[in-house]
Amino acid sequence: MRIYSCTCGAPLFIDNTQCTSCGRAAGWCESCEGMAGFDTGAAGDWTCATCGTAARPCANYSGPGVCNRTVRADDPQTLCRLCGLNDTVPNLEVDGNRDRWARLEAAKRRLIYTLDLLGLPYGTDTTPPLRFSFLGDGELAGHWVGAETDQVLTGHAEGLITVNIREADDAAREQVRVDMGEAHRTLIGHLRHEIGHYYWDLLIRGRTGAEQDFATAFGDPNDPPYDVALDRHYADGPPPDWEGWHVSAYATMHPWEDWAETFALWLAMAGVLDTAQSLGIVHGPALQDTATMVEQYRRLGLAMNELTREMGLLDFAPVVITPAIEAKLKSVDWLMRGAAVPARDQDAPGQMFPVGS
Ligand SMILES: [Zn+2]
Ligand SMILES: [Zn+2]
Ligand SMILES: [Zn+2]
Ligand SMILES: [Zn+2]
Image (tube, rainbow, N blue to C red; front, top):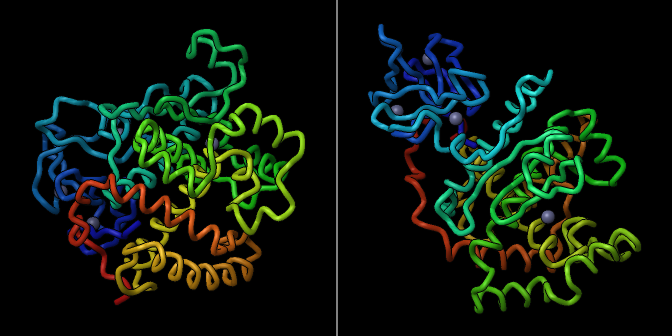
């Protein structure tokens, strides 16, 4: 994530709703593809102070305040293109749900930013269409006809990414993380994993060459079938030497989960390296190829782990990227880059805040 600049010269971060220096309303401008300050006219109309485009805040920005994106004035939609991906949003009559939703949207903004950065296709017009459902326990029955339980499971099905909004409660999520022995458990991590399943459906399923490449790198998804692998995983746990071959214990369960976990690491690496490059910490073409990405991420991860340990925090980069894991990352990279459309203009998005060199 890059740091943008208000026309007054102050930095603007991706979650800002106001410039702390000049007081302008802040938000994402679709025209300059970055964070910007906005001037507000007498009739409540907004104008991007960077590019001059007429816009209005997304209905989820002006309403519940869970979004900070804008919509171009000539766009008939009231929701921005990120909020337009939502299928179900939390019930705002439940105490705390607005804040949970805001945290989920903040994670989603980072996710979509990285997809745009990499030029990956997504949307409601893909097959399957990408949709998000943020649901609390007890809200499922009315959502999925025939749902047998009131417990919402975070997961992916046919492009629909469902997240149990309990994951937005730090204490609840941390308890599960400890119980499951996970190195990290974060909202952005959930979204990166689930969108990995979406890309499998979108770009690999039913494509002979891609399915073969996938099976070569991750194994045959039909042997054993998913439900058999699931039962075996929860009965027996991961194999003892899993860390040499998989990015997490969960990834050992089935080739699809191995893909999603590896995909999530690949996406995290891209996001981290983009941020580090914009800060001047990493030099050179950060996202050029897997070998360069892994090398830069290794060096950065080493330094960051020492810094987070110094502060008594969890390791920043807990996964040791072995040659086997690097080969899988390379496979993800290969399969995804073939699908990437020319990325948005990465050289001059918005107005960049001058940090580093
Ligand atoms: Zn400003
Ligand atoms: Zn603009
Ligand atoms: Zn929005
Ligand atoms: Zn999964």
